[in-house]
Length: 308
Image (cartoon, rainbow, N blue to C red; front, side):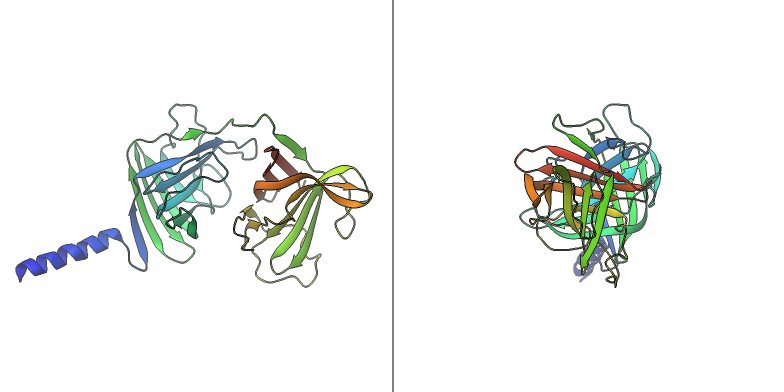
């Protein structure tokens, strides 16, 4: 009987340490992989660190579509700290708090926990709403609350080295500073946005031929549909990413024929380049930045528009 009681006690203790209950999760990370993005081609005013705490490594971490391990859990942290000039690159020591202004000493609302299936595909993705990250000498401790109200306690101990992506550019990078932006509400949570060099007509077209335009269909996070298509002159602030599942979910960019690099002529819009193999749109109070890669030419395009 004593042996049975001892086994039961050990099992109960194990369940508590795993934190697999409904209201909380305790997680011991065995891998830390990620990037030091620096000022992200001048987009951020504070150096950025983007890394994964997981029970498996992330492969192709520099790719727009990194490879996740099957049946894995990853805590993704979008952190802002001091500039790093020491190699190997590690996180600046200190205490970081959850924030939304991308200032030094914070990690952003894009920090989240993701889980993958047996194919390494993401099946669950929940963002954090609060938390603290403590970085020590080869030790990291995260305590956070996600938007579902669940608490998370994550710890990592050991050596790690971040990939230096602070100066990574592509020889074929296209920098495009748009002087005009057209945003049109369509239906549900769907918006059309077009970057271009000239004024747009009410339907988003332009009378100026032979100019380059970038056209996206995005899905925003809005509480309810506006009664008038002109109620929105901007998109909700946040990061929109390329949707490979065509889910029409909030914070995604459509992969259909709407997401193309276009050119206008006297007959209307025609396809000049090709579809995007990857795309990301970042919306802030200051402006909108889109980073896209074309499928055929494999050129990277950085499109910016300033609200000032």
